Image 1 (tube, helix red, strand yellow):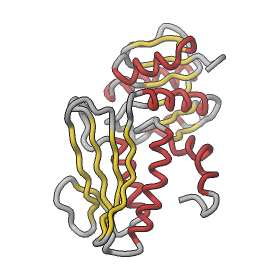
Image 2 (tube, rainbow, N blue to C red; image 1 turned 60 degrees about the vertical axis):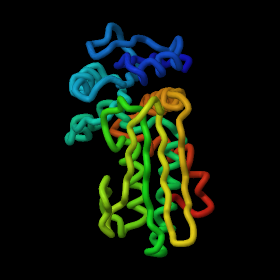
Image 3 (cartoon, rainbow, N blue to C red; image 1 turned 45 degrees about the vertical axis):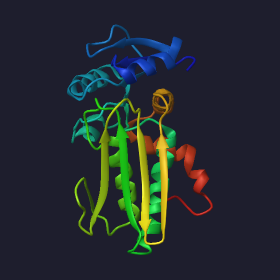
Image 4 (cartoon, rainbow, N blue to C red; image 1 turned 120 degrees about the horizontal axis):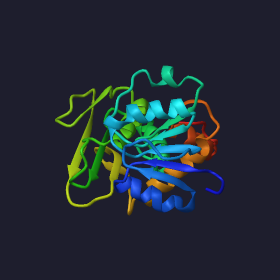
Amino acid sequence: MTGLRIGLFGRGRLGSAIAAEAGGALAWQVAREAPPSPADVAVDASVPEALEAHLEWALATGTDLVIGTTGWSLPDLEARVGSRIGVLTASNFSVSVALMARFAEVLGRFAALDPARDPFLVERHHRLKADAPSGTARTLAESLMRGCPRKTEWTLGTPAPHQLSVGVVRAGAEFGMHTVGLDAPAELLEITHTARSRAPFAQGALAAARWLHGRKGVFSMDDLAADLLDPLFAFGGRP
């Protein structure tokens, strides 16, 4: 992170992990209030209701912004940002999870070849996590459905034929576990990602800040991942 000044909104679990990972590159860390000094890139790991003010600050100061909070909605984000600054949004900063999303689409394509192959998704988080399903689960569900067009929406209940079954568990202190799979009459295939700490999310947030700095427009974690991961799929084209 040498030479890049990182500002951080948020003092919660993710914010604390990012601050520890950033070390000397951390220019400031605030809960929600206006920051005390400039930064090259700011990471928002605070709360969704504070995002509007943080975006306005970023636009006013010309500061690139990485959005890591979940549960927010800004339908006009791209129009407001334009080419003024760079903004990157992510439901999960782990690059491994970005790789898993690509696997999920391939799995969906495989399921689409045979109606007896039934795709599904299960996620588990600590009991205090507010959103259910998580933003990561929603992203993975979209990847599965993109690969398997007969699944057009997800459900937490008993699925209709066109629905993807999604299971959610909120218990204990689990950092995050996501499984995508398919259930066929004679076999079961599952791919699981389990976070052992918040370090992968913190490392990914800082990787996103480095990648975003100097770019203009609105991006997602998938844009960053494309630079790193697409060559891995070159043998068969991008999922």
